[in-house]
Length: 590
Image (cartoon, rainbow, N blue to C red; front, side, top):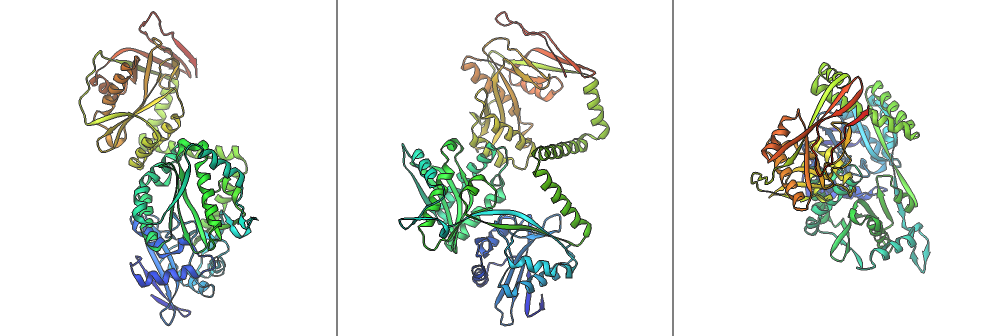
């Protein structure tokens, strides 16, 4: 606690659940030039509740001589790094220090002095509005406390200023109105669509689980792991819905087609702004643009509400936002470093990234190089330098790789377990990502599965226990022309009715329970019932896989061997004749 320049600074390690502080804090949040729901007491408290394990709160409160609250800065120490950031940096579209303009420089100066005295040499302030007086205050005071400042553009947040929209018959004409109405009419041709806005936590709690699952699935379909795959983020949205619902600021908007929810927006109405914060939609209906239809409905309703002046699309540079917006608001990524060298590294890293963005081929090359480097380092840590080099040389110069091919016994009887087999859909993959988000190898596998869902030639299966836990995954496709990466070659099917089980995966936490063999046997039985001849393969050196298949009732019928000599390869092996057909020997040059 210290008193400087007529403000008394109080530093708290936690945000207290105090009604008086809440009222004073929110009064400040609503008195600044651009009030934001992200600046409120409720938002900061929700972050603290959900992210307590990874972000330690540092709350600065500034009081005048009459004990009136004049300033608030909600900061956090990052676990494991000791660096300082905004407490709400990973959740808020805008972050800032709260005070009147006349008190801003005093507040900033006092906070920097306290952080320097405590030995913090890395401060990162993300999503700070470029038009905030905090920016000028930081520039004016950073050097005084021996911090080197670097500020760059973080985002251009798209907005619609409703007062600037053209009018027709006294009503605002929304951007791209004709395209939006055509989309809504097409989408609602058979069953009308309607929009509802959930404002209470009790109603939101019923909707949030499916919203999170759909959001995760939507990201999977685009080749990414979304933030709602993480339990902390889901907890944060639940905490926020409770707190903002009590304050009357929550607007969880849903578009329904009949009784089916087809699009969501986890948003807010605060001061004069309606926020398009975290939207998603049902991927199965993507061709109807349900997300665009919902956004248009929100804009239309906002334009008809006298106290709403802005629809804010927040962070993210999506094409649809640029097409609808008539103004933007810039945010900055500000770093303060005690070390000049560290500051220069920030600048160089940013300049190189900007240069790469201007040349897509260079950007892709850098991304691939970084990914290769990351995987290479992981392999070196796992195997060691000499073992890794020896394995690569052996594989390139002289190696034999044998692959066994199995078919099920006439009546395979797997061990009875309390689990069921079902065909994979996007919701299954999304649920599995939520369950195994801390298992990077399983997440990589699930991303691959999400892309494969679009391939009609493949069908995925998942083994699920009674509690909904996904235990194993596998895929089936035609045997004919199936590419075996272990052999680096394609094979021909023994007969036209053959199918291949492939890309089987058990999450790390579920291994050792026999799920691989059990799932394979169930899939094989299902294929047999459909008149197909199922096969599965395993590298001969993978003893656990071979034993698992044999235990589940599979029998080895033949094998192929990839012989690699000085970069050339040949695939040899005796193949059983089925319906008078024999697989030809496959040779290829590497």
